[in-house]
Length: 499
Image (cartoon, rainbow, N blue to C red):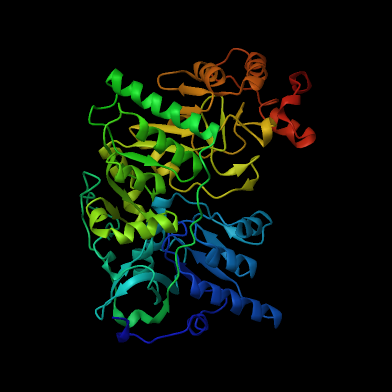
C-alpha cells in the first residue's frame, strides 16, 4: 500500500537529513537494518567533506547493523556519535581512535532512554518495512529492535519498503511499549509464546516523509564451522546442564534459554540439541540464529521469542518459503521486552553469553581488549546475566595462539561483576561458582577453566596475594596484561618483578 505515500529515491530521502541531526535506524544486528538510505547519507557526507563542509550525524540503532549502515557511514567519516552497540570494523576503528563518540548501553535500556529524552531529540527515524498501510501501520522485516520507540519519538519517518521480505510477515511481530514512570504496570508476559502487543507499529501517517523501495537481502554473515574448541565448550555446557537436570536443580520440563550470538553460541546450541537428556525447550533471547532454526525443524526447540532473525540468507529464504510452519514457532519483539529484567527474572531463563576475559573471582570483561580497545559493546548480556535463573559465561581458555590467557588475576575492564556470574565454561572445563567465597572461586576457575600452561602462573599469583577475603594484590593484578604489552606473551610473566 505504499502508493499512499510519496515515492523517493534514497538520495532524495538523504537530502532531507542535515549535519548534526540525530537519526535513529531500525535493525538489530544486520537483520532489519535499512540499506539504501544510510548509503545515500554516506555519499552526501563525502560530497560535503569534499566541498570543505561539515557533515556528521548522531546514529542510534537497536544494536549492531550491516555494512551499508555502520560500515558506509564510518567510511565516510559521517558518524558524530553512536549508541548502543556496534560490530563494524571501520566504525570500531573510528571509535577507538576517538573520532566517534560511543555510548555503550544495556540494550534493554536504549528505548526508554530515548523516550525519557536522555539522549536528546531524534529528528529522523529510518525504518525497514515489509508492508505499510494507508493508516500508518508498519509491518517490520526480520527484526524489531528499538524501531517502535524510534518511530514514536522521531519528528519524521523515512520507510525503506524492502520487497525481499514478504508482506505476509504480518503477525510475526509483537509490538509492545511499556508505560513510562511513575507507576508503570507490570509487563503481562509469562511464557515465551505469549503475545501482548500489536503485529505492527502504528504511527501518524503525516509523520512519514516518503517511501524508498528496495529489494535487498539482509547483510548477515555466515557463521564459522564448529571448531574443536567451540565444540568442546558446547559439550561442556550441555554436559553441565544435563547434570543439573539429574540433580533436580533445573525443572524436568527445562527452562527457556537465552543465547548470545556467534560461533560459540551456535556450537553450544548444537551440543544441547544432541543431548537426549535435555528435553524440547523454548528460547527467550535476543538473536535467533541458524542453530535455533535447525533445532526447531528437528523438534528440539518448541518456540523462539527474540528481537531478530539473525540467520544466513539461505536460512531466511527457507523460513519465508515455509512461513506457515514457523508462524506458530517464532515471535519478534522490541528489545526492551526481550531483554526486560522483569521478564527474565520471572520466567527463569538460563543465560549463556560470551566473555573476552574472566578473572579468578568471576568478574567478566565482555567489551574491551586489554581494557582499552572497544570491541562491540555490552549488548544484552548484562540484562540477562544479572537476572537469570542460571548465568553462564563461555570463552576459550586462550587467545592469540596461547599468548593470551582469558583467565587472568583481574579483568582489565569490568562489565559483569562476580555477583552476576554463576558459571564459567571454557574448553578446559566448568567452574560452578555458586556458594563459593572469592578464594574458593579462584581455585575452581584456575583448576577447571584455565589452560594448563597458565595454571601454575595463576596459582603463584594467588599465593603471592596471601591470605585475605579476596585473593588480589594491587601491585601485580595487571601483571599478565603488562607483560603481554612488552613481550607479546603472557606466559613470560615473572611475579617477582611485581612484589
